[in-house]
Picture 1 (cartoon, rainbow, N blue to C red):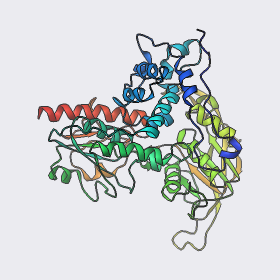
Picture 2: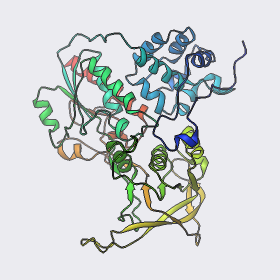
Picture 3: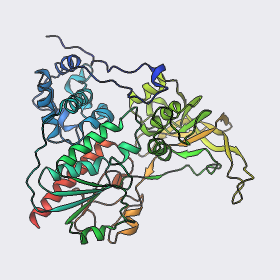
Picture 4: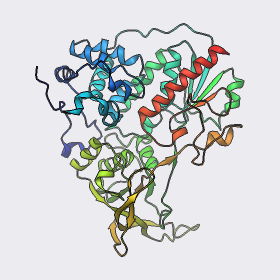
Length: 469
């Protein structure tokens, strides 16, 4: 049978329609499309796609079950190693991980592994009538700090082994960056809630509104009878450019802007929130978070949204799919230019600092690509005398984040690196016995799936540690 050289397209909302609502952009495969896409899999003996998956999903096995129409069987295969399949199927960069290793991709387009994973997870969630089997308790207690992807994964893996797991989340809803950092149109809150609910059925306790380092300390967690602690507190400290004008009103960090939008439920129809509406918006940066911020601003009513990025389209780090969706929705890309000053006017009503005024624009300078930097990417170099101004009513800075400093500041014996990341060994163990860490708290801002992988590694190490204790 001839193999279709292209993966089956993902049905989506019309760009002109979706640019003005927060409903999910990608609509998902039907059962018929999923089966046809699954038939493209070669079922390779050496399984290179599995090696490209940070959580080691047995990809050919679950795809084989899709071919047979056994969608629940496919879910069971995925669920053996992944606690968040509906999330991963939506936000993981499969094109640079499992799909990049796909043998079919050598000659044709790779199998749509992420799209198939999403289909299977959504099918299970829509048809799940089977009670979750709770493992017998092994008598050990583990605390998880943070309910983002690394924390949820670590909790799920340990719960399946019989551990009594308690997750402590600073905000009022579990999910971490999955709920507060990723917009509704890319990852609906109901999807995350369903995944968290599955963990609760396994016996995982979720305590919200608890800030570890303030409400409780890690020392106090040990005093409460926990024998190990996993820190997955994320990277919540935004980076700024340190250019003039960043103190003006209307300048946001991307994680502040997205958190405000999600926390205040600005994604709901006719929301009564103080989130920005109308005007011209500039988003500085080229990653997935920058795309999320730009597309969110558009949906909140911005008249025009610009992405300002200092390199070319070839170096743009965001997922290709997210860039294409942004372009389809009318977001303008200003490439090979970089902000040097945020312009505005003074606010005499601010008695503390009258220069804490309002944004009117961004002065940029054109860039050209020079010699490669330490990561192999060509370094952007300013072009003298090429400054120009883009009018703006709001500016969103999306140039990365650093790990949350609170844990380190309140925990004795915890070593961090120069970037504030918690130092761990290959098993996720920190410099303090019984304390493990993973995800953005260690690496700084990275992908959901890499954080999940770190959660799995730490769960395995915690199990070995407590089994031998």
